[in-house]
Image (cartoon, rainbow, N blue to C red; front, side, top):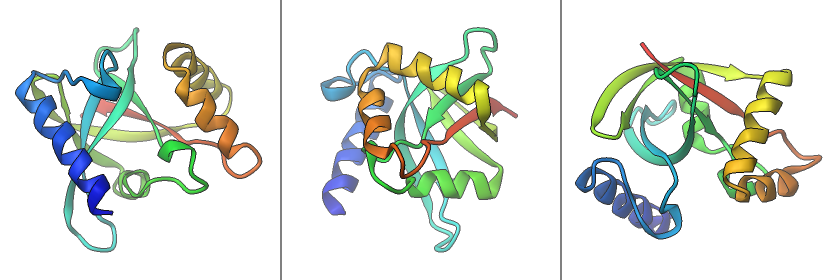
Length: 142
């Protein structure tokens, strides 16, 4: 676990030092930093995640609870859904967001677009086939 935490801390620091841009495995990807509170611990967390910007609504981004193709969704997903709100850092801005889970055909359309832009998300979907559907959340400026 500390290896993941160290990796995330480095990404967070690089994101903040470079106005929302990072290199390494995320070079060229659009990232946001999710601020969320643990639903059990009450602890505040900051998690870097790849997002898809909504081309029709500049106040919205979509995030994908892929968890690298693991059989379970990441903790941040459960924390945000339970709270119904959170805070994100996007580029140089920090703001509160409402959280809405996207389902059905709209979810399929958005996820397919993410796979088109970042094919690794297709690999995550293949790993979870028959186990779970990777959740898609819309984060909209509150």
